[in-house]
Image 1 (tube, rainbow, N blue to C red):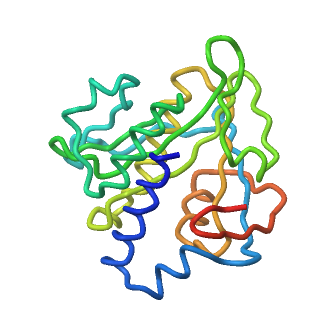
Image 2 (cartoon, rainbow, N blue to C red):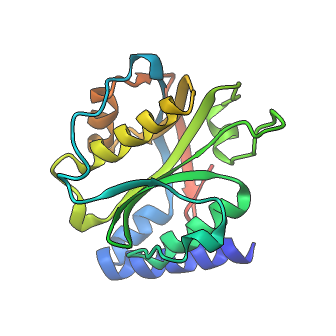
Image 3 (cartoon, helix red, strand yellow):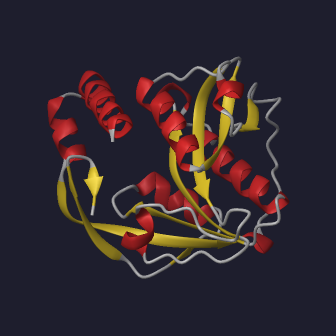
Length: 207
């Protein structure tokens, strides 16, 4: 609970400073927004064509042990706190790193070694029931200064290829219908759109 409060507090401060109060209010609460659940069959995934060396970045899996992540820095404190919270919950993640700075990351959840699913609040919203070799991927972030030039596509494609190499067969996710860049990235990567849903948000919590 304390971790969640700290994350929300820092998100509010960061959004206010970067975008202003009106944008903050729009992000904090909305009614009847349309969301698009999607799924991706990893058998049809095309291999990477971009080189991370050419982009001067390193794509890594975020270590599960907090102590192994002390070398990583984040441009936003809320993202650093989310990393700690996600690891504590048993979530797993990938990151794009320049030097020691995480310029982008994305998280996922799957069955654990005992074949049980670690709970995620989006499961109820999206009516997701993960089976073995299936993944729910969520909360992708890219530093604003790094956006453009196909970096979002590269981050998502790299994560999908990494999951395929781990033996996973299907990935679930979602985006909002008004997020046009997300719509085109997911369509470019061959995601299948599922039945659209309506949601609302109160104090940054989507329900």
